[in-house]
Length: 323
Image 1 (cartoon, helix red, strand yellow):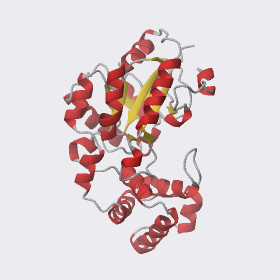
Image 2 (tube, one colour):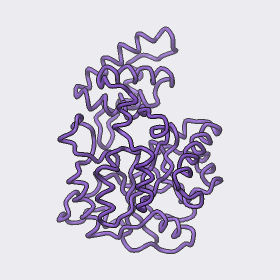
Image 3 (cartoon, rainbow, N blue to C red):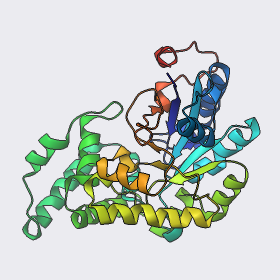
Image 4 (cartoon, rainbow, N blue to C red):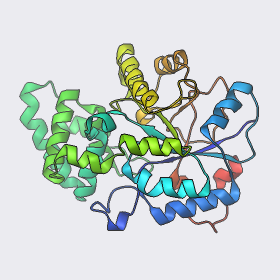
């Protein structure tokens, strides 16, 4: 059976010397060590090879691994890209194109930096509780305790308090209200002009074009980074089409494009829309080694960087054996 390990990265940065050392990211040194570990035990493949393998029903190299980077962070250009370019490895970079074209900060990233800027999650939760009470008369809101019981469940890497904040502010409240609360928290904790912060946080068009010229793969991650499985058909179409308009404009081939679901959010409708537009394959956040084929090309799972060693000398772990 065809097997593929897909590794997912988000923040890759010089954490200790950044303004937000508490952000959940991977340090540059550990990133390099993980790349060297993968180089020792796996065979790097390109997005084009994965697409060709699926189309032709042909096997990939043994222990094939594909590197993916979500959310268009400037860190990827500054730290990850030079390492990959030097070693002759392709990365696949998935861009929520609104960040580049409009210089806004995604709500998900505002939440990340609120969490990183205020280590005491209890204070953030207390502030949210006060805001919910303030806006209660304007919205049909449930009780704070109901929301907390619904959304305060720990994940693989976050505490119950952190997941409550993320879930409530990413999708648990009406869109306008959660955006308003996120903006207030971002102003209180970060206190920086959004457009300026965006230009620091994300790559720009010229940087993306440079990476594309050097053989990196640039893929679709939606326009607004919304949850696709919570949108109607027209809204998902808009998310995909606006993203593709930008990507094709910087040189991505209409005959070789791929997608990565924001938050890993997909449903049958999203899969159908990608297929109708000729997407080669799409990535989820489901945790597993992939077995890419035509039937599953739009539901490819990935491993998180934390699932694999970050030292070139570390023995292989269980994920190697499952490949």
